[in-house]
Amino acid sequence: MNTEAYWSIFINASLVNNFVLAYFLGICPFLGVSGKMETATKMGGAVTFVMLISSICAYGIHALLVAINAPFLQLISYIVVIASTVQLVEMFIKKMSPALFRALGIFLPLITTNCAILGLALFQTSKAYSFTQSLIYALGAGIGFTLALILMAGIREQLEFAEVPNVVKGTALTLLVAGILSLTFMGFSGLG
Amino acid sequence: MSTEKTISPQAGAPQGSKKMLTAMVGIGVFCALLIVLTFEGTKDRIERLRAEALEKAVFNVLPGITKTRIFQMTAEGQFLPSDGQDRSKTLVYAGYDEADTFVGVAIEASGQGYADVIRILFGYNPSTQTVVGFYVLESKETPGLGDKIEKDENFLANFRELSVALSADLSQVENKVIPVKQGSKTKAWEVDGITGATISSRAIGNIIGESSAIMVPLIYSQLESFKSDVNK
Amino acid sequence: MSTGITKNAGINTNPSSTDEFIKGLWRENPVFVQVLGMCPVLAVSNTAENALAMGLATAFVLLMSNILVASLRNFIPKQVRIASFILIIATFVTIVDYAIQAISVDLHKNLGAFISLIVVNCLILSRAEAFASKNTISKSIMDALGMGLGFVFALFCLGAVRELLGNGTLFDIGVFPNGFQEWIIMILPAGGFFTLALWLLLFNFFKSKKVQV
Image (cartoon, rainbow over all chains, first blue to last red; front, side, top):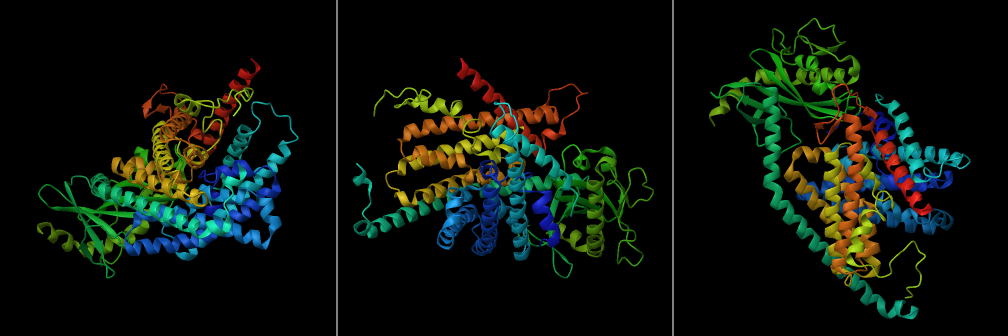
């Protein structure tokens, strides 16, 4: 039984142990989608949404697996659920808002391989969070992920106008910026 | 060439979905089989390794013991022998020396450190009414700073004779273990901190303080259950 | 297929098995060139030992999944291929997870959740989709070995530098004289980002030099 306070879980997931900058989860989309502010925000929103749903499903699956005593099926069941959730979200967005669907493009299916979502499911299980705690954890993680993405997008958009040496251009530069961002987020340690 | 690749929807659909289903189910069954085989094959060895690691930790916090036994705490605060499988129950580890005399109990506790939750094991000796050992099971404290709680000799020395003496009526710990600033320790129940790692070291003091306040009176009142099970 | 298209950076249109192996080491190195599978690369590379273990675990999963996918490539219908790949990869990751637990409790604690996260390592899925599902078993094996080795190599570069500068040791053996003040930042997440950025920088530098010549 985990006795962590709700606000502590939230601050922890979004700032102190930010999924991208501290746990290195979700790096692929972080590097790939953080070029423009607009796509970054949309991706962040989509990821948060998928995280919330996956968190609920993971909680249910874990309870089920414990009941039937098959803990070794945890990984497979989590990933299958995440993949299905993303598929459903994709179909839902396609129906509800074709414009948004077109804007997100290839990024939606990429959420499946976003380690942040699977990482969330695994972490919440290992911390033995209750249902509400898991939801808050997912919310915090998603918002933290979006925050990191937006910060990075803002910086990268500005960098477009700077004179950057050719060898550093591209991924190397993004990683350097990410390193500095990670350093600044370390300042949040000790909160909660 | 392009017409070959077009899957005609009407004719192919029922066959197509049946094929998809068989493929998925087939792969699913095969994969599940592989996993179950691996699980069964490694189960014993993994259990053995885990038990060894735990024993090593318990030996670390209760000097002088040669064997341990696991006890489970019931809702009424009683301690019964257990195989340690039920992780949802509070477990303690009793240590016995070569002559099978009961020496003390290793207690697991955890709490928020600087970076994340820290899990520790500390040893309690009821005859001296002190904490006699401390070991970090799991910590994500900052390397080089917070992880001094595992390495700093002066800090570790805190836990060789940390007093958790009970009050006269044996109902509670007389003076709760508390962390103090480095160098200002004057009482036997204070934990001298580490200046460069105040939060982590303070966390340890609080974790032990909280846990001992609850567990020590309970364990002390049940000493017989630890001693009498030696001969079982 | 015309073989006259030789201007495409020397892409061989009918590569031999050895070519499949070598490309993964340098020219199409999964970390330095394709920039795939970054999450574990940064997270588990704080010591050389962890980096090596993680690299080998990933390479193993890559190899087994490539073999299975290549063997089943004619039986898996197109619509469910991604789902099947993920199922297969998840299986081998679970197997590796138990294998590591059975080898060493400490190692498993160090690698932690990232073993399970191998399943979403874009590298493995991308090799299954781009190669193993379209090539023979033997070629897929070579591809997996090459990419896997390239991955281990990249991870090791990262882990070695981070451990050397951040801890003064390599595989827990002290390297620098006692007076050496460790650069703690190297072991922290920020250091992971910086080290990888610098390696990429170096890699790009050498690549650009080659093109100029």
